[in-house]
Amino acid sequence: MKSKSFGLLLCLAYLPLSFAQDTSPENPIPNPAQLAWQKAELGAVFHYDLHVFDNKKYRQTGNSGNRINPIEDYQIFNPQELDTDQWIKAIKKAGFKFAIITATHETGFALYPSNVNPYSVKALQWKEGKGDIVRDFVNSCRKYGIAPGIYVGIRWNSFFGVNDFKVDGTGEFQKKRQAYYNRMVEGMVKELCTQYGPLFEIWFDGGASHPDLGAPDVLPIVKKYQPNCLFYHNNQLAEARWGGSESGTVPYPCWATFPTPYSHAGDTTLDHINLLKHGDPNGKYWMPAMSDAPLRGYNGRHEWFWEPDDEKHIFPLEDLMEMYYKSVGHNSTLIIGLTPDPRGLLPEADVKRLEEWGASIEQTFSNPIASTSGMGDQILLPLKRPKTVRNIVLKEDITKGQRVRAYKIHALSQGKWQIIAQGESIGHKRIHKIEPIEIEELKLEIEKKTLPAVMEQFSVY
Image 1: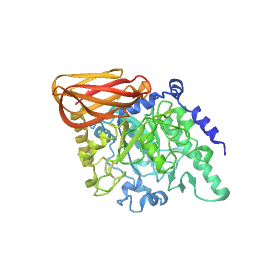
Image 2: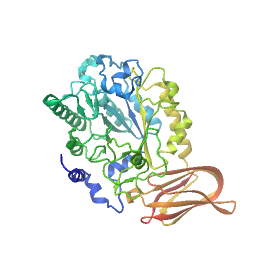
Image 3: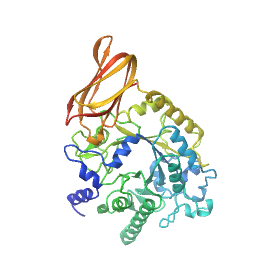
Image 4: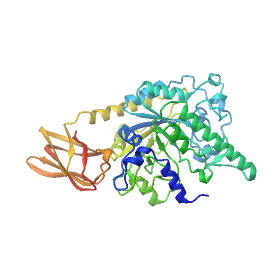
């Protein structure tokens, strides 16, 4: 096994050129893919796999059961009404900006006709083996102005007997099967990177480990064929980080910087989880946080895949709005898990809730009472006449880095100044939801900074 220093050098070698040129340890900044990902704010990940069609509860045996028990009859996969346009129109109406499809998940079954993986839609009676859900999905995304991404699950594969990247078995038999699996995965990653046009993000769930540890060598393939997509993630590089839970939120403060260029590989110690949640204000690498949660995660449930009679576990609108405040409003990109049903359609109840959520975000944040931008330690925001304020939005120009370390917001109300909000981290976006107050003017005071603060937006709603 090569040394850790070799691994770090290898990681740095694969960092995007613009990232290497434009950043510095004292003031890291996002590369173009990271910048686009943060500005998108809201995305969806569509989970679809064989067990959507088995009419069983996904978690009856826990995740481990799905990871080790192959689906007996993969011909059950038969979405007769498949309509990826319907999926994408639903998230477009909700204001989402990007979408990701699970090209493979824990079963190992591929939703596209792979030439290297025999366990794919090519083996189905459905559409005579000529279906390609990844193709349909990407086409729908581009049709409706949504940036497409692909999720690749390689850590588990119940069909090939893979757990934690390792093929089951011993001796030479295992070594040869492992080599075959690694070549197959690398071939799949090349197929996905070369057959579907430019991608917004490639997501390796649970990470993609490291070739020095015997895992497939995926990073150079992605960087060669999709140099402009966000890479998430392996032991060499993470251009975003998991926010430490699947609650759809991150705690405050949440910094966009991290002490290492890779984020985690199964480290569940409390210290590391807290680092994932909060980031590191002194981190040398730009690595913004992702908040993720399934839409059907309410009232004790946590369902990434469709299950029968599960509509009552769709998050209420109030919970989704709170999730938005504590993810996007905490300097994190929010990704919501959605799942089409056996028909191949996003269920009507899910579509309706997404529409309600998008309308609520639009109603709350589309028309600021007043807005400004600027540099310096004090920025004033006068109102044309006294107005009742409920939300304050701050945004740094993160192309210059995340520079603010402490701030206060003062309000002039009934002729007197008072502090109505304060904090540490701003980054791409910080939303303060405050008790309604009638004000005449606001003042943002930057108390601590690493470099002069550059505010892209200071708005009240």
